[in-house]
Image 1 (cartoon, rainbow, N blue to C red):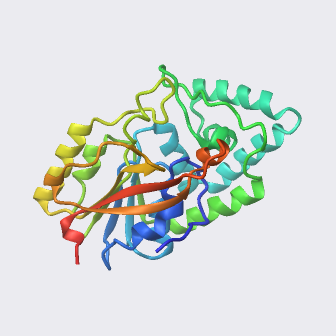
Image 2 (cartoon, rainbow, N blue to C red):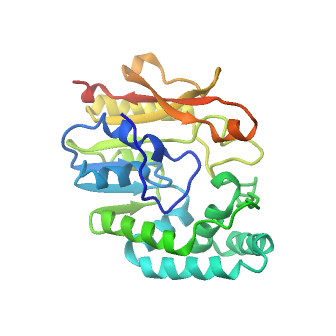
Length: 283
């Protein structure tokens, strides 16, 4: 089962937008609350809301500017749309110089609309941070980012899907896992190993593998239902350490399509991602 979610205002590289329907296929018939402790662009919550696979949602990310952006999308979408449109139009005379100006401002004020603009304009929509936690990705000089009219449609669609049934948090993921109740489902897409410890990490905060596994053990002990996107393969190269067998999770290989980075390098490599499903979700 495959499919692409068309509504997604936050353009995160690594988003599960392209394989959202495959992930939803592993959902139970009824979900009281879907919890995303590492939400990012919250592609799975959006897909689940669109397909009416869950009644309510908890969207969490430890990066506060991102969650401030989510709050604006859900509580005041017109302010978000107007702010983004203003930035997009102001860039037209000198897009790249303007990008660096906004990047410098964002690293001082953490304005969520500026963050949205930077994500739409940055190279490959790939967020990068320096050792000080500052956004330091360069602009994509070939494009101007999503046009205001398109962004308006995506923000309003997202607002209509999630407003009134979504709780937003910016906590450590362990605190979110403790909120899971019977009838709920936790979907986790944590930072891939090796992408949060480099010179220019993709995530502002890394993931402790042993601590993460310990928390999965706790979920098992509670009989909680959960799905985890974790390790995978790019062509013949494997990346990420697989989750241990003693967790007794079903591992499913999901074909995520051709790698955009490989395409840029003149290669034709396909990405395969691993999906781990808790025993509570097995037929």
